[in-house]
Figure 1 (cartoon, protein in one colour):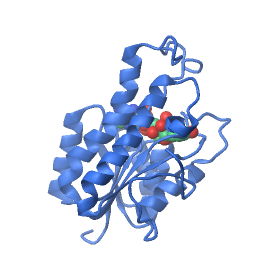
Figure 2 (tube, rainbow, N blue to C red):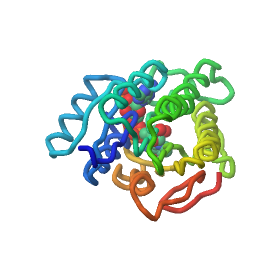
Figure 3 (tube, rainbow, N blue to C red):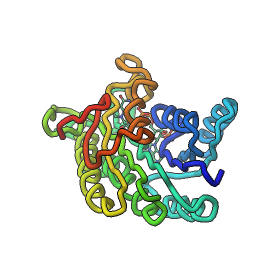
Figure 4 (spheres, rainbow, N blue to C red):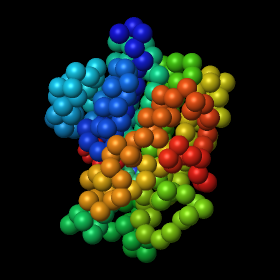
Length: 239
Ligand SMILES: NC(=O)c1ccc[n+]([C@@H]2O[C@H](COP(=O)([O-])OP(=O)(O)OC[C@H]3O[C@@H](n4cnc5c(N)ncnc54)[C@H](OP(=O)(O)O)[C@@H]3O)[C@@H](O)[C@H]2O)c1
């Protein structure tokens, strides 16, 4: 265990986070699978342990600063370092698919809904980076799971909260890439493409395996040495 690299994945009970946790564990990482719902996390843990993967579960709601600090305390006591952090947890309000959900229409969406997206999709990553900062190993890697919907060069209509929160997440990537450069810690954003998860829906064009490919590559590849960029399909894309 002492030689095993330690990876933390947020929102890892399903979707892209679950597959990222699985693939990092398959590559020899000790993965700390985090989930805001402990039962959902336990179900995910069971599936990965059935594959004989080295994973543990820790409760983490990325909107709760104390959860992030408790995770840091646990890691300090048990592992004393973090080699990879994947900030994956995210929300996308879908008024069309979730009856009762608030509209994401830019002309009517409430400030509260905008702030909820910001709190999860942007500040969630900030909370984790701040809490784990003392524990990052030299050359640790931070991957922020962003979206093309946050890219200014290709900005369209709809989903104001999600778009703003992912644009801001990309700024988080740039700022922390600079802040952590002296420690050789690499910080990057990834767009996984349109992926068949609860968020992406059944019509999405990519499998979860395709969706996590660049995330896992940035987390593990000796060739992936850049920092402060936005990636899709192992290629840099414009902000
Ligand atoms: N799917 C796509 O097409 C696509 C495209 C571009 C970017 N992305 C990004 O990829 C990431 C993963 O999305 P996905 O497609 O896998 O979606 P998903 O299946 O809806 O999974 C989202 C995950 O985030 C968790 N989560 C939400 N709020 C959280 C919170 N406050 N604290 C901790 N966990 C929280 C969810 O937990 P619960 O199970 O408890 O809800 C779930 O585990 C997101 O950041 C998303 O924006 C997805």
